Length: 218
Image (cartoon, rainbow, N blue to C red; front, side):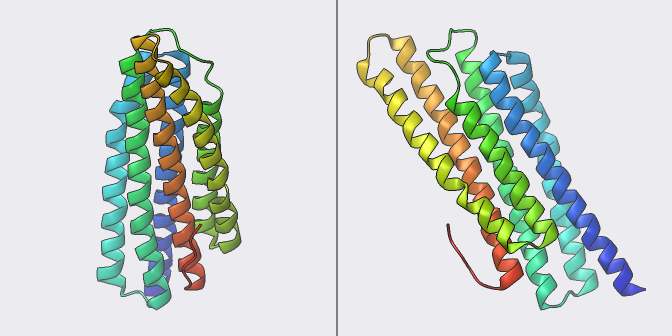
């Protein structure tokens, strides 16, 4: 009976993390959509909804504490619980970066965008795939899926570097202060997305350790 209750708690933990991950994916998607459409109301919603992500983090952490205190998990399960705590920390930071992107949208306002937003939505889409892949790997205990997810970070880094060079061109040209200011703000967005991908890769690396007991870095 006690083991069945423990397994039920672990499954509830999995579901909580997946729900939090879905909330973060949606926040990233909505923040970049708001930027592309210059939808200030949607940007404000992303900022306001971050409180729910923070609440999920606290709830998962408390569930993990309860598992440790009441169920006395074995060594293998200790790695699982420790991984879960790390995962929600990374997810919470991703949510914060979605808020950061929405704050940039508010700063840009309705000023015409200096370039078509192709790279930034591309970075966001790949980052979302990484979030989903890393969490699916956690739930399925799939180290190879975690590795494949981590490897996607190189593509995000390449997109960031190309966009950095392009936006720096606007800044260096310095012909229009408003253009330079917006280029700086878009650089911040690109950096936030690059960090979101890094956090997703962090989750993948922790899943690999949870499953194999070996540390791998990507």
